[in-house]
Image (cartoon, rainbow, N blue to C red; front, top):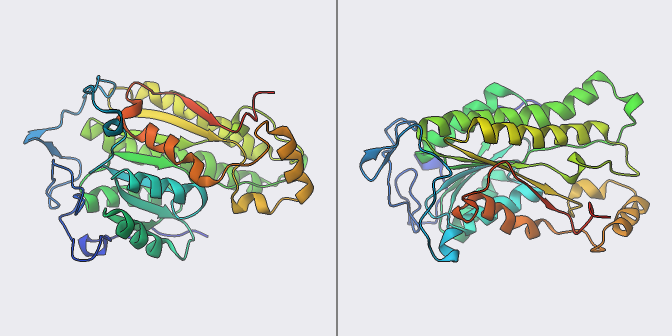
Length: 318
């Protein structure tokens, strides 16, 4: 299904009751560098001075208390696939760290409700936007709308993904293309849309959700398209981390087996086999990834770019 991005105005952004504040400012945990919602998102100011379009992103931050280094208060983050599974926990995590959050979803019927709940629970601003990441014009419009509605964009978590179990010799052109359209094309289009904003601002942060499948061949399932798409995401992140080093950090997080509804569709025997192959002898819950995404999104990882964090209970080690 091809869905269109939803354009939201100031009154559509969800904030805790009685704490409505200007666009781009958290009502209780606001950014000290407030932006004017009537100004174009690409002409932001900081401390009364225009942001230079070529600030070196890896410039050393101040030496601060470690908990402060993880603080995202006042930041604006986009999470694609942000209304379910790993993406939902990432959206919650960034909000818990103080960021205002925009959830981009394709078909969720609960995204708006989720945004309200996240905003209320964390005293930040949140909104849901509908877009198909595999359609460049849609994700471009959605990301631009987020920057307009919130006044800026600091972080994008490129998380949308799909998987299928099809023997390589049996893929139809449409089946192969659909995996690539979402997992690889969509990842690029999402990062590109944010990267254009980051270049003008002079700062930004891209975090891709890749997979251990980028570096190994999963068994017994047959998923050549998924594995190839995730390998492409890891290499894409490396390329962008070099090309965009003057204004953006780019990193990957590669989860192993995570207990999501995607795994539930597979036979019980497969799940038992996977558990036998994982030294930790269990799958992770989605919330166990929250800390890694906050780390990558914050000053705690200020000198890290082009990295691929593998979080898999030791699965890739034997």
